[in-house]
Amino acid sequence: MQFIDTHNHVIPFVDDGADDWDVSLEMLLQAQEDGIVELVCTPHVLTSKELREEQRFIEKFEELKVRAKEAGISIKLHIGSELYVQPDFDFSCKLATLAQNGRYFLMEFPMSMIPPFVAQHFFNLFAKTHTPIIAHPERNGGIIGDIQKAYDFVKKGALLQVTAGSLLGVFGGQVRLIANQLMDANLVHIIATDAHDVTRRTLKLRQAYELVLEKWGPDRAEMLFWSNPRKIINGDEIDIGEPRELLPEMQFRPTLQTRLRSFFRKGSEY
Image (cartoon, rainbow, N blue to C red; front, side, top):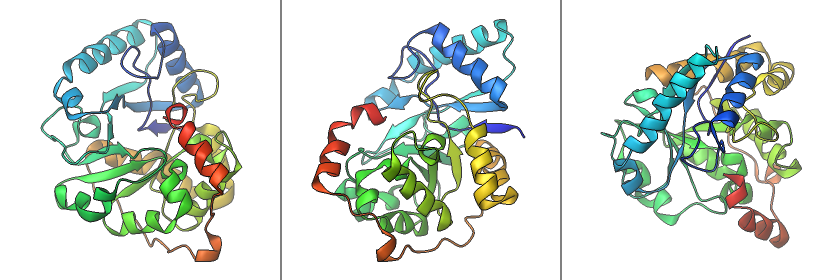
């Protein structure tokens, strides 16, 4: 089985991902050995100003392609970004949508909460022209505290991207529980690496794929690791199936200690 990754921080010197070119290339070599044949590089873009100054990201991306080719790495590389949620998005920028598909964009909330304006008017900003992919909802404090919000986002038109490591317990048992509940409720549309390094948060998908294959079957596994990522890159329509609401008794209610731990780990969870 081959894979496509649509969320990672493999470009060095632009965010908290790869520290240098050596780490970046080692990440790509790990990805190639794992079966990843195509990926979208998605550096953090935290402000509208950064998005307008996208050329510095693009220059590093172009250098990465050259260095990867020289190293014998055959993975097909695209550029995009992980946009920090904000009241406005400039979709004319090259980094705004994944692989310049003109439709799907990857965005993240603050790790500890969901900003109030999201529920009020966020989806009206791009309603019929662009589709948000919410990065790692299973690690967001607002969704951990009220998992029904994930269902509400999907019903409003968003897609959800769960991190492979979350299903494997890399971020702890509570996050793994939420990831499994989202999977059971048919609320997950893409699984990606969110890779940052070569040790803990790696550019690998195979182990998570094998878990999904065993627990949810081959059709679901193929959809989450290949066909939906392919559709995202192409800007094609994605069938969300039949998402299910999560019953209140299924929801995890974090203690104050858990909420505080989530808040103080905010930076390290990017």
